[in-house]
Image 1 (cartoon, rainbow, N blue to C red):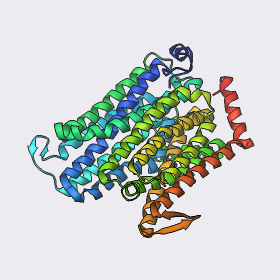
Image 2 (image 1 turned 60 degrees about the vertical axis):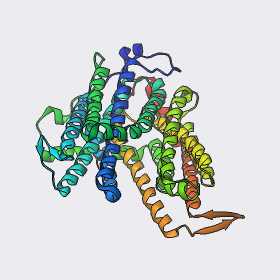
Image 3 (image 1 turned 120 degrees about the vertical axis):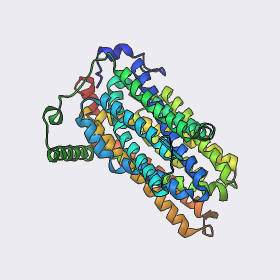
Image 4 (image 1 turned 60 degrees about the horizontal axis):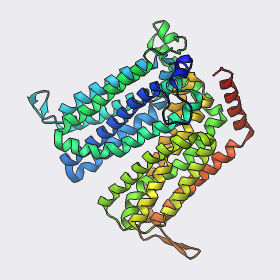
Amino acid sequence: MIGEGADNQEDSLPAGGWYVSRRFAILWSGTLLSSLGDMIFEFTLIVWALQRYGESASWLIAGILVASSIPTIVLGPIAGTLVDQWHDKIRVVLLASSAIAILTLLLAPLLTDTVWGTEMTLPTSVQLGVLLFTVFIISALNRFIQPATGVISRDIVADADRPRAASLNQVAQGTAILVGPPMAAPLFVSFGLTWALALNAASFVACAVLVRLAGRGATLESTEPDAVDQVRMSLRHRIALVRTDLVLGIGFFRQSPTLMTLAGGLLIALSGFGALNTLDPSFVVFNLGGSADIYGWFGTAQGAGSLIGAALFSVVVGRVSMPTLFCASLAGLGLLTLVYAHQSSVPAGLALIFLLGLLLPAINIAVSPIMLQVTPRAYLGRVGGTLNPLINVATMAGVLIGGVVYGLLGESFSVTIGGVRFGALDSLLSLTGMLSMVGGLYAWRRFRTAAVRAELESAAGSRDSGLS
């Protein structure tokens, strides 16, 4: 909603540095705080479940993760459509962030033995039902915040700075992943559930304030208010409008050869990495000779790699085209996974997981500028709301397929190819690596087609002439 006029140009520093603009720095800080709060929220609930239910907590933890994931798949496109319809994107962030903060504060006393100052314990079924429902609603509200902040970021960042902004956003996510989980347990043990959840609520309040500050005093870019803002419509007409816009958004996505290239490459590659997420704990124990406790260090190594990788790519990102970075990162992740699949020691495994984490941010760093280049502002919410669910579906499919296939093969599975023995885990991880390499090769071939090149060149020409 903030235009790319003089206001933004004066606020930007020369390309090549780590700093994008004052407005983006404020928005980035809000994104970092909300991402950190999300990580603390999720891991606090997991720690609470483990403490309260012990060994039987696994089903509740799975329920929390599923309740958090469903809105991304089911509500993502709808939320993106509504964000595109609502011309005041800052207000969307303010309202959604405030609602999340309130829900988080209301949840805390319901999970303790003191409900709003009275000594009363809710029945377990009611307590867990409220917990899962709240997690679902908070995740659903986040589906509005993400596309809205994406449009705001697009408006306050000049075209040449968008790759750098995308890499800095990856720094924020990497920081949250690295810092959030280790903070959750000490906060829960030291201060209790109420204060741990209050910290998450405070992070969303801070996010709302910072987003508002990022837009203060700027020249606002907004579309004309649509029919929803102009007249009072019946619920049936509102639903019809959302359905129409949703169909238009999905149709635009399907007709864009560039967006379909991104989706195809990600679907192929991430279906494999979903399996990696499922199989990696067993691989660490059975193939690398580690233990369940040591596996936690693998998450730390990947988080550290992601944080450092995002920071490094923010410096070098302007020296390589985004399609090249996208294809190379998918292929590189596949190659590293192939090497990882045949390791037999914990130190070697940790080193390769760190390298995998180092390369992971390159995918999102490349996707965001490409998507922004070919997508008109009015479609950004719907395009993001379509791409993200596709990614989550591919990842969840990989999780399920990897777990089922490994369960069927078992540890006794063994096959020898060219004198090299393959067990169940290293075979499946090798397949994961090959899928990622195929995804990179598929995207590379598609980016070289006339249709994709014409769309990218047309979008760049429109941008240079001020039409985008």
